[in-house]
Amino acid sequence: MPSRLPLITRRAYLDALDTGRYPWTMAPRTSWRQRLRAVDLASAAATTIVLGSCSAGNAGDYDLGVYRGTTLITTVSLTFGGATAPDLATAIADAFTAAGGAGQPLEQLLDSATQNTSTFTITWRAGENLRVAVDAQPSSAVSVEHVVEVDLNALLSGNNAFPVNVMREADPYIRVITAFPAGTVVTVDEGLADSDVLVDVPCSAVGTFQTASSSTLGEGDELETAWEPLAALELGSDPSPSSGELELVVPFSPLLAPEALP
Amino acid sequence: MAINYPVKLGHRGSSNGRVLRALRSGRIAYTVAFRHYFQCRVRFGAGDFTPEAANTQTIPLSEIPLYPTFPGPVRRLRGTYAYLRTGLAGPGLGSANIEVGDAADLNGLLTASPVLPANEGLILPTSGAAENEPRIEADFQPTLRLVLDINVAALTGGEVWIYIPFEPIPEG
Image 1 (cartoon, rainbow over the protein chains, first blue to last red):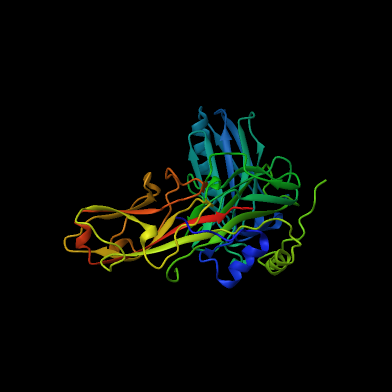
Image 2: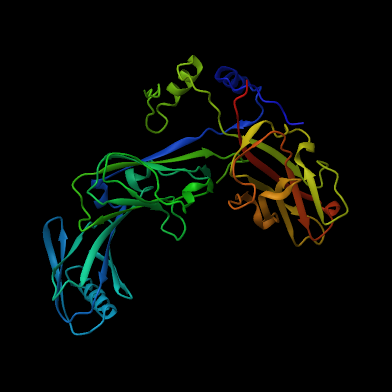
């Protein structure tokens, strides 16, 4: 026979918990709340990534400006003589790699520049919130957009890191307090494949939003021994919006174990 | 017309005291049900259950002494896990796994998980286990299934703790 529970009218239940008449350990659901503001996108917890795409391999001269806000830092120029989009993506990645070499203008700013088929990826060093704009090209073949990844555990100097050894519960959500620019969406994951708990949630309007995808880890409870959430904001042409603030809310509950967990 | 929740939640636990006071006073007029854990410790070679001279054995957790049985009716929740405090030991033991479920589905909550000394610590939940999704249980009888390469009766040591989350449901 199963054990009978006290009726959970609120007072009987709370009294039973209080007096120990309820023999099963309580692990109440609580919420981890982490704010992310536009200003955090230029913090040491943030990494700005430029995602470029080449739709054709048109020969000619290309100028890609690197800006901090509206201030031009340098222009990466190349003359492309090839014929295919992958060749152009390779040439642009190579040009940025060269500009990040010793003694070059991007030496202290560039982390890496890579190419994959007809796309290229420029990753700035942490805290370098830089924008790339295609200032000149022979025809409209190259486009760029910006993603800023923020290590949510590193914000606020680690004072509000997600706890270790807890049960992360289903259905996290975001609360947009101040709208980000139109079209901005946020994904929360651990930077690994199949680790997302929120996917492409719009944050360009004030309100409370859940994930638009049904194929994420956010659907279920997961035991987390060291969860390191990253928020990736897709920001289009400008990685440094002047305003925007959201709060990520992740429900979780403590674990029970016969001895202290590390 | 919508009614605002009577307590405003604050940051980092600052409002928890207000919530508890509001629950006690009745200002929060909605039934509260916390997440709880059914827990059970099973020691091997220590008399917690009668071992069989077979390589596999299904142990009803309700028969383990000292621990309250799984309650009912409740809503069993996702995330059954275990903690291996001491890995299983016995002469010639080379393979040892546990499963958690019930008589109808022996690994419905936790699929085969190794419990040798090298595996001591948390045994993570099986997200895809057949019975992992929350459900109402009126009379759930959890079981621990042991699969070894020696007789269960030959085990000389080992200690595993099973945790099954649930929440009470309103009655009356």
